[in-house]
Length: 262
Image 1 (tube, rainbow, N blue to C red):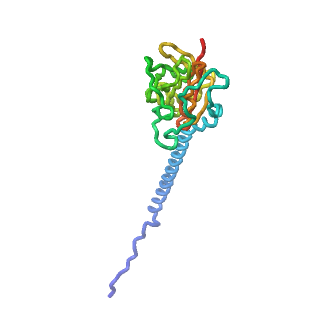
Image 2: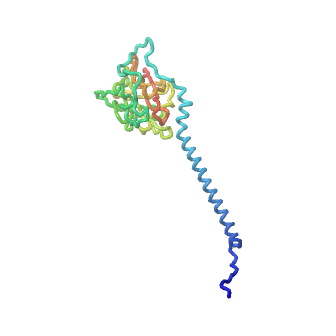
Image 3: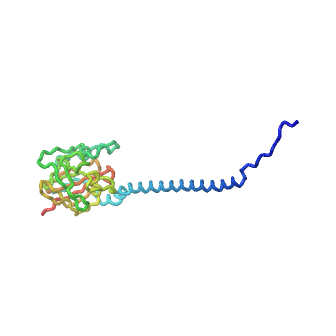
């Protein structure tokens, strides 16, 4: 007697029309999904390159196009035979600056920019004044004498000359990438300072009197160079200082202007 019986199985749908139709529908969908993933990857890559270029271009363009227009090194502002004299405020040619070697430093505080020549607190009835640069759209920017927060105002470095008087008024301002420039925001107010040219005007209203200064020199110095604080007393000068290239703390741009006689 037979113990087992073999029955031919029902044909699988491996080769059935229904399976074939399913494969036809599935394969294009997978192809479309892969195509979408590739497209999004391409979009993200292009977007990343565009953002990186957008951030780096101001730095690269400054190094390649703008920097060569400025003198390479700031030398003593007093030429042989000049009637000016240097102030003892500048006691050394260089000093170590926190942050240049990689340390985290708060550059909104001008007191750490030149630790070897700290600014002095001045006792005066005038503790602030205003500065305007028409070409940059800066109007009546607040300048605090011996201030300590570049987020709130421009800072007149304490111990340097006062506007309208013999000597050099040294004014610090914050800068960021030019794309974020806002002349009314002290965090970005000096971002376009490198676009100034010889002959441009700077107006300062100090103690009720307006003074007109004309730019005559623009120089880039190292971050630890103290010569921007040098004083000369043969006329009234102003030096505007900010960090360059834009968005970095690598070097210092010095825009120097002389009082225009009326």
